[in-house]
Length: 268
Image (cartoon, rainbow, N blue to C red; front, top):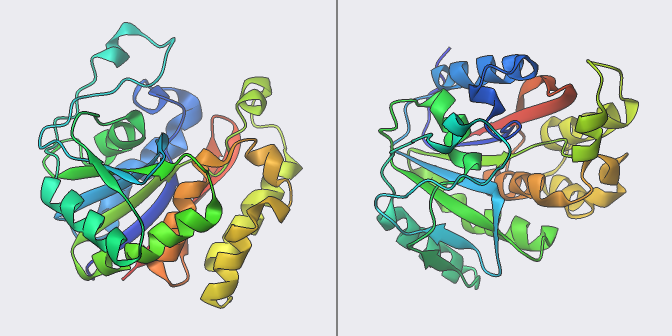
């Protein structure tokens, strides 16, 4: 069923490097989900991706009209270093977001040299393989301060008035050593506890301020530091939830690379 409306916000788990497009069986559920996801809403006029794989002192936006490719992974087959996702950039949207940040007293900048990282082009290759929709990336802040990332989300709320797809590209479970130790789809109660907490936080009958307070103090959640020894893959969720200012819908709850991961969608 196609959902009408304008802006849309999604937080999802982008998978392990380029594995989703290499036919890796542990990513099958994610690949199916990504390919079907665009059927659930109108085609956006632009896409903004908050990537877990880019950190700067200040929130930074890609400024190139024709972004290059950034192969920010290692140890994969040679073919993965020739992936191309030639979507146009979106300098006007970058300029607009800088102004939105300034209204909230958030300093930001534009980087005209950096290219798309795999937090953008791996999921978008599955969702929009024609690479025709202008795409833009927004960095995290090196501070990894949850309050600063919630503030970034507040500043982006105006984007929901336009037909823009905002994507928080991270991973709701990101403990690399646990991935490497994983044998099949063995039970992991600690992983489950945190995913259940995220579902309750994002979709449950809570006031918006309580949702934000829970994410502000996310380290107090069950198994928080087990699931996120470092929080860069969680923080895109902070931006998304604050920008949406409403309850989310859970749209994915399955295993990726043997670990349970979830995805959420907010409709304008």
